[in-house]
Length: 506
Ligand code: FES
Image 1 (cartoon, protein in one colour):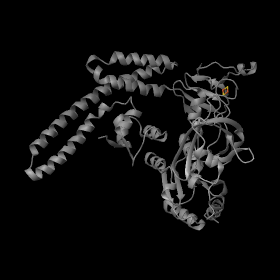
Image 2 (cartoon, rainbow, N blue to C red; image 1 turned 45 degrees about the vertical axis):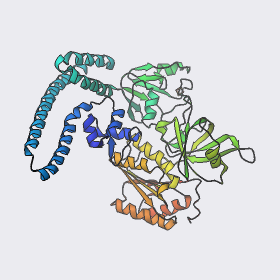
Image 3 (cartoon, helix red, strand yellow; image 1 turned 120 degrees about the horizontal axis):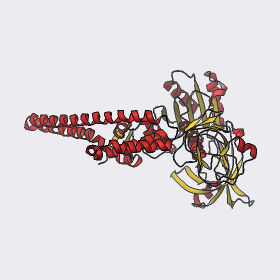
Image 4 (spheres, protein in one colour; image 1 turned 30 degrees about the vertical axis):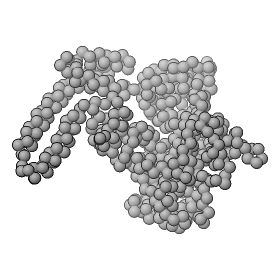
């Protein structure tokens, strides 16, 4: 049977930080259930980790289970303390061996530290890496080669991580780590930064940045031609180069919705999921050479070019983008089912995987205030979760807020259509709380229910920013109520949700 581990146990077991495991969970690479992960999943996600280290832990647990079992038997058959004490002696011996091994490893690590001090004088990561690799080979003697070879591989991996280039952007002071083989642009986007770019293939020049320090390497041909002045100032294309050392770059980043251009992109249908009768989750893939630039929380017009209405015009509707800008090639939407709407009908019955769909936009100012140091409170009603999901994922990729609390309000349990995702965030992240709330679809009941939860969960309403995505009429009530509680206008952000039948609300 597969073994379940708490995040702390898992982190200890594979020798990584708890936050590394949380990151994999955020990226949906690792599933968390009631705060635990499954060992076989962990092995797939961290294949380089040395699980054999855990034999002691495994043995102790097995021993304890057997001991408990034996004790129960001993109550029936008489005490078998002899067997128990033999087991304790065996475990003690194993413990002594493990201690011995740890001491040897400490000596080895001391030597390695010394080597690092020497290598810090070099300014060449590749040379340093090769030297340390050679050093490992020389210092792992015959006796420990088998045992330590896996340690060596793991250390190699950790050193690689340590030595990955760190990139700093000016004037924003944002910084991020570049993964091997990633372009400078790709790693910035993965880190949630809204840097300028266009074609992503070396043609438009929109991703250009001034290289102030560090080494880069060209990864692809570029058609864009720099002017003499740009060349003199050391401009580079971030989509066509990778970092070979720590870099400092001067570049433009989108800081407000005005910095995001309106775009028309023909995307392909990647997935259509309906795990709830009332919501369709549509995922579109943008062309590699034309990723969608948007800020988390914005919405966009989706046009079904090949499907027309009675006036022969393409069917089109506006929807909030439900995904994070850190994955600009996969764009997600949550579409409430409305059988009377020909657009929804086409999505449900006619549109197929790989069909073309045109995106026009993005628009909207329901975006994260990245300058604010406050904790974040998110509130969604039904499919208002789409915009909130985008904001939460973006805040997570930026490691933005001290604390995040998400209240998802709806009338019935199944309308929490991505409940598992929210629970996995809640389980995996120390600073994230998820509160699903069920209540009747009546304005005063919804607002009272939220305020009651808010006051129960938070001692005061200072230093918080609220992001609320509910129907327009509900947003107005929330605004009045929160203002009366002393929340300032600049700390409240509202999005009117689309396409839901909220006729019961006044
Ligand atoms: S994004 Fe167009 S040249 Fe880099």
